[in-house]
Image 1: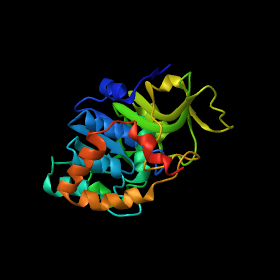
Image 2: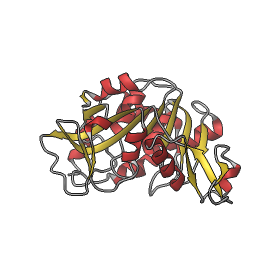
Image 3: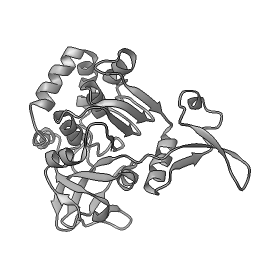
Length: 281
């Protein structure tokens, strides 16, 4: 059974300098509150993994928390590029950023391989693809049964996997509804799994075929209402599209970025997330 603890305690206990962290969610259920707590605690030299790095990874990179990024697409959804990520790659500000780029399919395969306790993943899609020219972790192997050449790449097994969900019950089981990315695979692949939730309930009232993560797969559950804002939680609050548009201008200037982070991340705690979604419901 996982521990029901404050987010600040969960991050302090599990996320250490130099570790690998995956904060997953696909447009929906993105764990913004957890990312902000990592920034507040001043973690450094992290290796971040994510299929679609967006605003929270731009913030983590811009605050100097990240040494390496393993990813398949990076951008501000519906708006444009990640300006803090680009500054780190092109100019080394605030610290240099190493990148390892994959396709979406490869990232999903790599998480699944990690969840299956396998050392690497296989696919045909990389044979002849240009990513092999820029990613030395894409290798080739020969199938022992058919002689076919296949692409192989390392499994993703983060030290810490973090996701957000609508609710958990008091036995530690977590219900994920709506658009799913690789949240299940991230939890199963990670050495330690932290789940932030909108609420803790007596009964999940899960419908048949719902995605339910059993309590034994999770290390800590943190109740953080609004913890996915400005992304959304199906049936709870919508996506705050204006926040993503505003972020493009905020992140474009180093001084404005730092001032925004000071006022909206460093000087507050996770309780502000509940206030931010009240006007959206």
